[in-house]
Image (cartoon, rainbow, N blue to C red):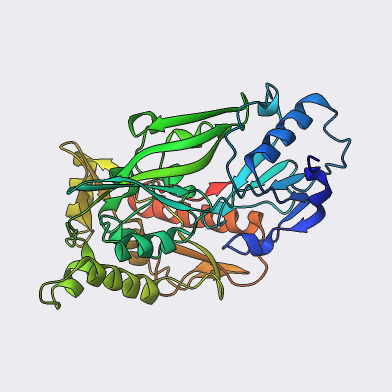
Length: 373
């Protein structure tokens, strides 16, 4: 007998522990799915019956957590889903949630890691979207698959990695993604997007403009021989102390640096880096360098360079600056923290205050990195 996924719906379900910023947030209906077939059922249900007939109220009306993939996941027809409010929740590490979410929340918890192929140069590895990102980085090193070391300790899930094109210390995940498997909740089709179709750019991808694509799995093409990237900031200084450093040494260095600068979200709510590092034309960067010789600059291409948003904030003496429940973290200026029961409104108001201060001082705009729901 086919199970009724709506038997597993929880109403008035708190999302406060499912986002690392620890914002007060609630879902009126929270469904934990065990298969893609269940996701198709919900798509069909929303498309075929009145949206409110199962009590979809006004605070995150449904929350779904797929846990396994079925080959029969391409049957749903949900042409009107784009008119419904919904979003996919992974580790909740890069989201700014409202107090009340009026739509469908899909909690992606798909698990599994599979080696698809390997030769002397590459290992092709499929990782389900709900796997914890840093657990996979550690797993890859334990299996002598290399490339992701610089992305150690980034919070969140594997499914979020391509959406955000996560990056740190001179490495972006796009360099190691072969393709991404997605479920199109609009058409009910199971799709494969190769690296080019993902349209990766700095902290961006096609998935940010195609929210109907639910990431099911990411297929990585990892190196069989380590090639360390150690030229970035503090990493270079720390790795230089190690004779013949390995990829595992680099991972430990990255973890130590991140742990020393970034707050533990279990103790202080945060999403890690809150602002993008601005990418500016060379002329603008050169003018800033004349006024601020210590400004960290990283070349992007022949016409553009990236500057450090954290340095811009720190240079104004804003580390530790606080208004009410929200502040700039005292050890890392790029991180905003929720000290005590902050709301989305408080976070965004404080962020706007920092943005205004930066523009007034440097005539540079800094954009918010996490996704605002």
